[in-house]
Length: 340
Image 1 (tube, one colour):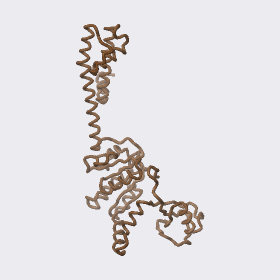
Image 2: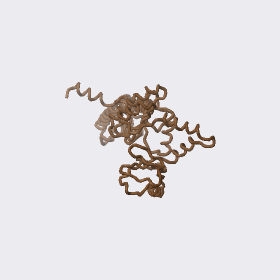
Image 3: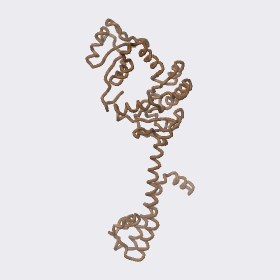
Image 4: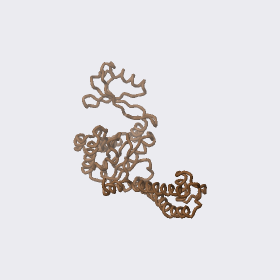
């Protein structure tokens, strides 16, 4: 290997490692020298190395002291060279730690964990969702990707922030998207609905290209982009405009004494929806028997999906067919209990 090749390898090593190696080599040489200069005072090389490090660090325990003029001159050389090198190493180590924390705050450090949830886009919805997960499922690791934020949101030191364009592979790789548990892509409501949906679809394509199997939940604002989002690889499509319009309709037509919004909010805070594929249609004779069976499991059966058609609260005599999907309400898992 040529000298040029050695230099290239050397300078690829992190600076802090290079400095540490230099400190170890220099002070070891000094320790070996003092052993050969004063073998009676420093009986082993390790005694000399120990004295060199203590002297270079200006600790000065006094357990080993050179007696000869040559030994004392060597001590002066250690203080001037090794001590300065040690001080430089410590200051570099501190600066590296500060730089890393700064880079992490500004979203420049890659995430190395696995099984995390990736949120793409920072907004009020994302903030509330992170708060809910933090309370209900504190062990979940959260990674936030956003290109508008310049630093990690305040009061959220537990999340890992990645600053960058989520449609770029380099940004998704920093979030370790290939090992993610789930991905949520929210719409940027500061843009036009069509532009926001286009960015959501592009982001979904990029995520699916980096992880073929990860469940992707996306927020689509306009109906004409739903099919494109499905083609891009979205598993679940949330249509907030449709939901809010329906909710507002209920609020308008009901009497003032009813509160549909509060009813739905409390329901979703304490219960969650579950879908179960019915493999054996003869397992239950009718809807009434199935409802009783699930009620004994603290789950409420309220409907069926058949051939992509939702049948809510069917008659008690409703008979099941092959591949029917049961719609259930059940309690949220307890905190720290895994959700699959």
